[in-house]
Amino acid sequence: MNFEGRDVISIKDFSKEEILYILEVAQKMVPIAEGKEKSDLLSNYIMASLFFEPSTRTRLSFETAMKRLGGMVIGFSQPGTTSIQKGETLADTIRTAESYCDVIVMRHPNEGSARLAAEFASVPIINGGDGAGHHPTQCLLDLFTIKREKGSIEKNRIALVGDLKYGRTVHSLAYALALFGVDMMFVSPPELQMPKEVVEECREMGVDVTISNKLDNLDEIDVLYVTRIQKERFPDPEEYSRVAGSYRIDLKTLENAKEDLIVMHPLPRVDEISSEVDKTKHAAYFRQTFNGVPVRMALIALVLGEVK
Ligand code: NCD
Image 1 (cartoon, protein in one colour):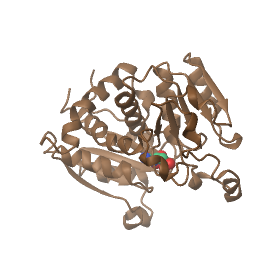
Image 2 (cartoon, protein in one colour):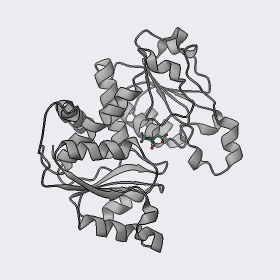
Image 3 (cartoon, protein in one colour):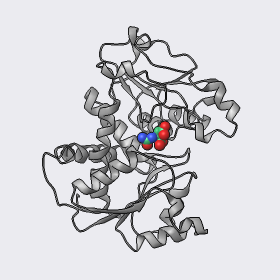
Image 4 (tube, protein in one colour):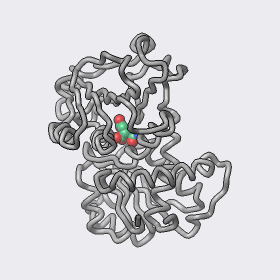
């Protein structure tokens, strides 16, 4: 397996074996991610972190990942303070950044922007989310979380809940779970259903997909993956107000849940999960947030060729 120099644009760029290998490397990174062991593996490297869209976890965990491995970080999270404000194109911004660094992490509101950036860059591009398109590193940390929490990815029945139309994390995750042969339930308001292509692709890969607008049968579910309604991607604000608050997970919802059901969420949450759930054994979302660090450490080290 060779990751050196590779771009990370979509989870579809990776085979099941490659995904499992990334998770294996991530597992070894955990003590360094926790700050219990020191590392200078990437001490000669600079990562550019180019965020054209709001982010808390993705940007901070990438920067933490790089720094925990002894690397350095440059970049911006407010594109309004850069030459983009003067009309500079994405291509020129990327060509500039790459002359200052060894790897670029970017998030951008346009679908396809990471792929476009990769065409211009000779350093690896890691996609931190391109519009409603892909979010491969979130997908890897979601898989890592399921594996750590449940012991395996395969033996679970998983429900993806919320905004399945605009939520990029669920587009990547549905594909990856299908690759692992996991049956899924897609639960959303009718207006926010999983795109047809994603559903068809999962079915062609041989998994059983159930589509519903009601969250019932919680007693059959092992992993409940909740998402935020992606307000910023709605063309019509009225359409948003019709579906806002569609699903809310609280203690009552979880009454019939399996003892060991885990609730995941890529975060940020707005009101999809009541804060009273945080204290229950079901809540895995803050551990999921932490898992972004070892997974991103593994990815950066692999694409830089420092882990083989
Ligand atoms: C998600 C994203 O940006 O797609 N957040 C994240 O990366 N952890 C989910 C969201 O914004 O709802």
